[in-house]
Length: 190
Image (cartoon, rainbow, N blue to C red; front, side, top):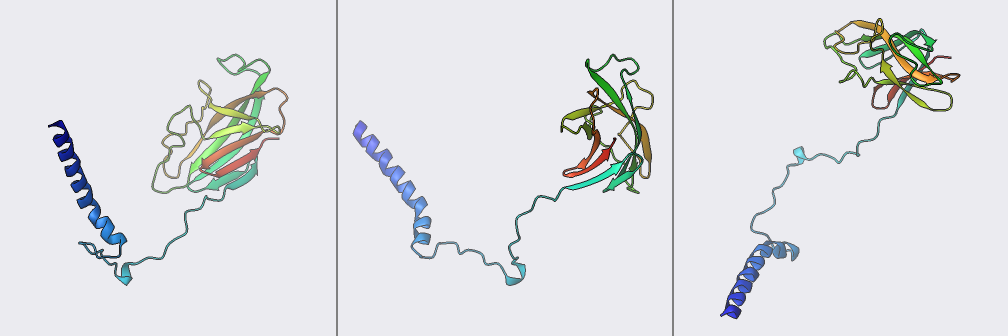
């Protein structure tokens, strides 16, 4: 009885598999399938396009007092100063000093406001030195004229301070501003 039950299950599975594969077999043998493939009119056919390419990085260099524009933003580093301490904070780490940037960002878009970052603690800039070390730029929390990169209105120029902690004696300092993707501005501070 159990052998008949297994035989019946095997027979049913074989029939299901054969009926499902009939269309595949007919197509592979060159026989017409039951549903003809739709044809695309010549007017609707497109030529294949090349795969998307990686955008070429745009690196613009500037000095203190100069501006760099890309897309709907213009960034200017007006000046900077170096201090061992800042208001309300001890030195960042022993052997480090604060580089405080005076900067502006102008929204060149005549119709839309922009925000430079979704979170205040993740600004689109950093500092590097001649050895290639990267130093995270921080908001100037608690400082006079802290840079606020949120909700910059059309045509508005926003001014404020941004800061980084760098080793004392670091040279070849650059302020890097990331406009998005591979588009950056490099402001040489030395």
